[in-house]
Amino acid sequence: MSVISPFPGPRDRRALTAFDHRELRRILDLYGRMVAAGHWRDYAMQFDIGVASFAAFRRSADRPEIWIQKRPELHAKQGAFSLVSEHGAVLKRGHDLSLVLAPLERRLMRLVRD
Image (tube, rainbow, N blue to C red; front, side, top):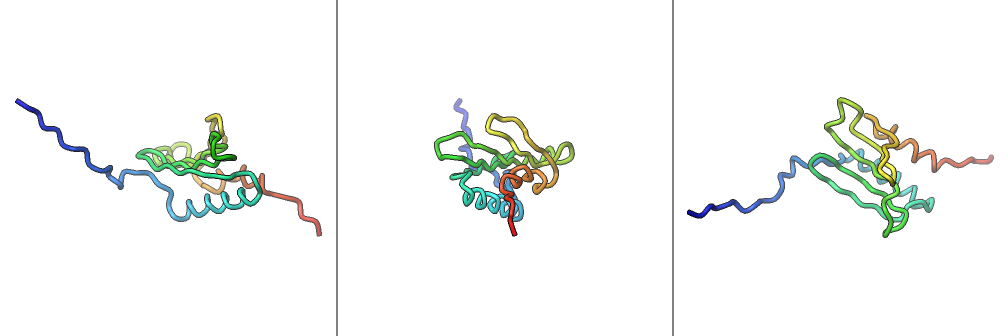
C-alpha cells in the first residue's frame, strides 16, 4: 500500500562542468591583476551540470560586473567560453579562453614611457 521513495543521494560529480587547471589559472591570474589595478574586489565560482561560471564583483554587495562562463555543449557551435556583462548580454564568445578574455586584458594596458 505504501510507496517507498529512495533518499536522494549526492550529485554525480562527473556530470558537473568545471574549469580545468589551465583555464582556472588563467582566470585567477586576470582576477589578481584586476584586483591590483583596483577594478575588482570579490569573486564567486559556481559549478553546475551544464555550466561553470566565474563572477567578478566591483564590491561584495553588488551584482557581478562580469561573468566568465564555460558551456561545453556549445563547443561545436559558437565556442564553450563566453564573457557576459553585468546585464546579461554576451560580450564575447569563442573556443579559446584567452581570446574571450581579451576585452578585459585591454583594460589593464597602460602606456609605458622610456
